[in-house]
View 1: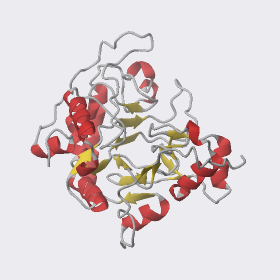
View 2: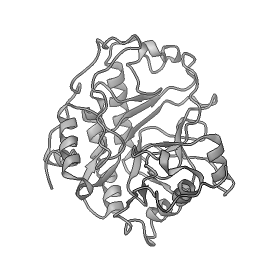
View 3: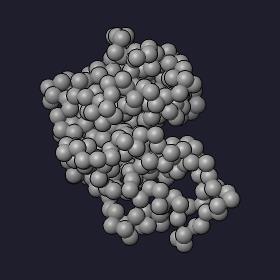
Length: 336
């Protein structure tokens, strides 16, 4: 693709990062890798025994819908035995974002400590994100092709958000998991300014790449890399890093279990976004990966493929979390 020159008289209104002091130095810890590569694995954020217990509770939630699902029987790993998924493998309906096991995972000390260390504050907001349980070698659904994207609008410049995956199962080279394009975040602005028409830029914090655009990165030595992690590890990545969720290969027999969780300082949120976040929480709804901005409430009702309301739908969690002061502050309901 030939470079696209931007007219000085029609430059887009960009949103600069106010957080440039974050990841702007030498730390001699995992933050250096996140700064350099755009992703990092924080080892042992949750003790293995607690992570394993959280996985069991996630499995119990999935089986609570009363279907014929048997985690030990691959023949039962079918759509008819699963609640409705937002995407293949991902659950965001049925108030799952606010199940007790989800909040227990979000409030694990090691998870909060990592984001506090990253942002330099303990006054954080948490995203209301999804549960992913991926069954390998399913035959009832087509394999999902790679869908390389970033979760930050081209209109935003610099670091605005760092996303996270709480690993409740191992993720090896053949298993389902995160694939990143290391160092692609360093070329983010150059790519958009030279390879795209700014009139097409959307304030939505999502940009999908096509094959030709990815070849631009590959010509600069940026290649995809499957992130491997162990039970209890926390995977972090800059929202400007090109990434996607990979399907397990035919060699995998492991059920992937992860919780998506991101945190940013509460001071980053506007009053409008805080009020919207609190409203979403009151309805036990889910949002995007962003904790402080881009608060887009997801549909709280669940519909079957035929358009009818799922009779199994839930308007509140099966097991409510304890509405502690800490949780309510992370949810944006109470102020720090």
